[in-house]
Amino acid sequence: MTTETLTPDTQTSERVGPSRWNPIAMAALLVSVLPVVSVAAPVLGLVALLRLRSRPHERGRALAWAAIVIGLTTSAAQAGLGWLMAEVRRATVERPAEALRAAWTGDAEGFRERMAGPGHEATSDRVAAWVAPLRASLGEFEALEPDFGRAVPEPTVPVPEREMSGLFKARFRGAAGTTSVPATVVYERPLAGEAPTSVRVRRYEFEMPDGTRIVWPEDGPRERPNAERREEPAR
Image 1 (cartoon, helix red, strand yellow):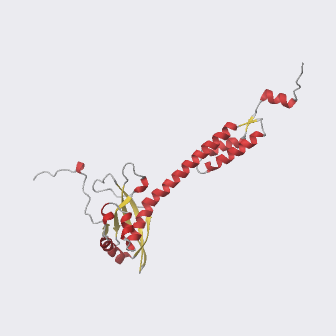
Image 2 (cartoon, one colour; image 1 turned 135 degrees about the vertical axis):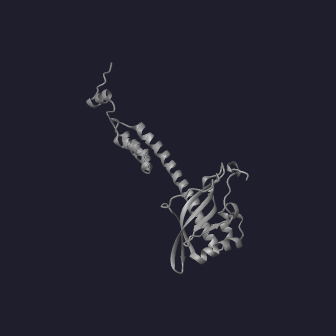
Image 3 (cartoon, one colour; image 1 turned 90 degrees about the horizontal axis):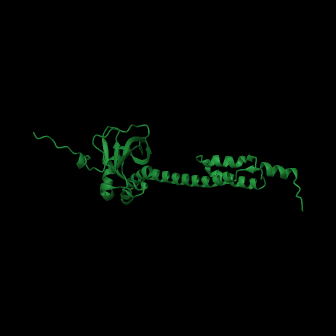
């Protein structure tokens, strides 16, 4: 019969077990759910697992693995959201500016590619005829910037379901220097099943310094949708 001799350290380990949580594992789990810094969670989780291998008296392996999984998932979601936001900005801010730049340089094909409705079928002559008065009055187109300080006007007629508007400042450079004028860009929303980044420009409205408005395309006032038209009473 053999007798196993237990050292004080062994006795304490078997009786008490892991006595404290690993601080790195806890920090990794906390970081994994925070925006931006969640990318550091997998690294902290791996560091915690390596530390725990040599520290059997500490707990936190499950926390470290959870931090790695959650951190990777959160970081991937944030990266995807960031890409989507960048693409939406490109579609709603850069695309209208690209279309205007193409129109000013005589690139009718480049203009049509970014347009919907009548603008998508515009001829080179029509594009040039629309640009001419703007160039004569304001100069060369430079930039189109969002105008967050301007209040959205109340529509005078019902807005078609597939339309949405954005308020901008259009900047031009002429002989007298730089001029900025308020501009409204009307977009055509994507159809169901299309990517949200596939919006196209349908209409431009420029408010000239003299109070007049130059609009593209000159397709007349918008009509009320059929379902919302009201018959005028007979006289």
